[in-house]
Amino acid sequence: MIQPQSFYDTLAKHGMDFYTGVPDSLLKNLCAYITDHAEKKNNIIAANEGGAMGLAAGHYLATGKTPVVYMQNSGLGNTVNPLMSLTDKDVYNIPVLLVIGWRGEPGVHDEPQHVKQGKATLPLLEAMGIKYEILTAEEDDLKAQIERAVKHMNETKEAFALVVRKGTFDNYKLTSLPSALTSSLSLTREEAIQAVAASMDERAVVVSTTGMISRELFEYRAGKDEGHHRDFLTVGSMGHASQIALGIALEKTDRNVYCFDGDGASIMHMGNMGIVGTMMPENYYHIVFNNGAHDSVGGQPTIGLQIDLPEIATSCGYKTCISVSNMDDLKETLATLTDNDAPLLLEIKVKKGNRPDLGRPTTTPIENKEALMKFINEK
Image 1 (cartoon, one colour):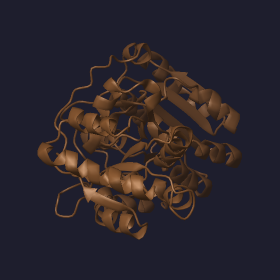
Image 2 (cartoon, one colour):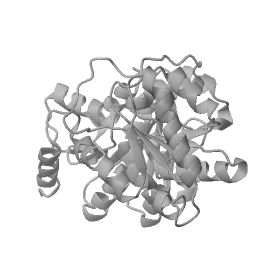
Image 3 (cartoon, one colour):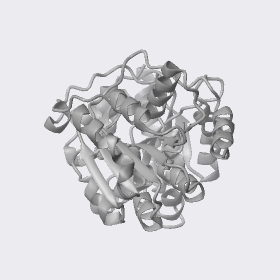
Image 4 (cartoon, helix red, strand yellow):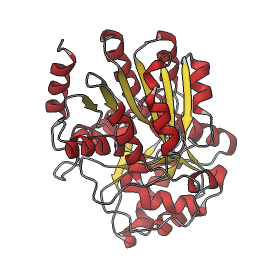
């Protein structure tokens, strides 16, 4: 295994000390080390991977130093446009070191949403003309590999990718203390999800975002023996659950449609809130479980608790915007939630973390889709 410190220090020796990106579970130990040791302005967790590429390009223009962009390979698609139309040698010719977690690597068991991206990761890099290597898991080989990457970027001013397999980085525990905003929260996300799900009418539809939120909703339904036909569990496509819910709400106006969203997912494609607001669906309930963290991929922070999501939603045209942070206020709000004008945003501030024995959906994505479609087309 590679020690995160070795990787960080090796890059620093070559003048690379600016990091940006979106955290990934395969990179969580590296990201934790960077968080503890880089200056705050030199480690920016971006709204999305495409935005990270813009930050990286700006850093290079200002300093002439090669930036580092980290991501899960599912986010590689968000970088295709800036990689092809901004940093590419036929446009501005800007070097960037890409550090990409390889979820869904062929031959390695993974969740269904990662399988296709895992197969496409290396061919996609090849199609874009980006030179890459699989990051070594041997400390003795690390220095030479980084030197090859640096030599390529210095000579060509092009991007270079290091693709990271599961288990490449050794453990590192984040030592940075949680912010006061986070540490003051007492309500768990799972408790909040259960309360909202229990309050909905039987014809309501839920679209839940990727990660822990969908897993906790699935566990709630299983525990109540309710079935999963009312819920669309968006196992991938981070940041797009709100638009899936909008597409359903606009067509099924006789049903209440809930989007169970996370702060990281909401921020990733925040422009979607403007589309919801301008379309004005009167049956749309946007529930954002905000813990200020990318909880599913290592707990790295988001800006979720530093910004005013209800105020943003109000500016985007949502008719009702509410924020709660404890169970009493949540239950009081839920008792009359659908009496308010919609589209509605309910921000529920929750603490980080999940129970260690949390399961995963046992139905396939196609089974989930077909059960939901049958349900929402019933009279």
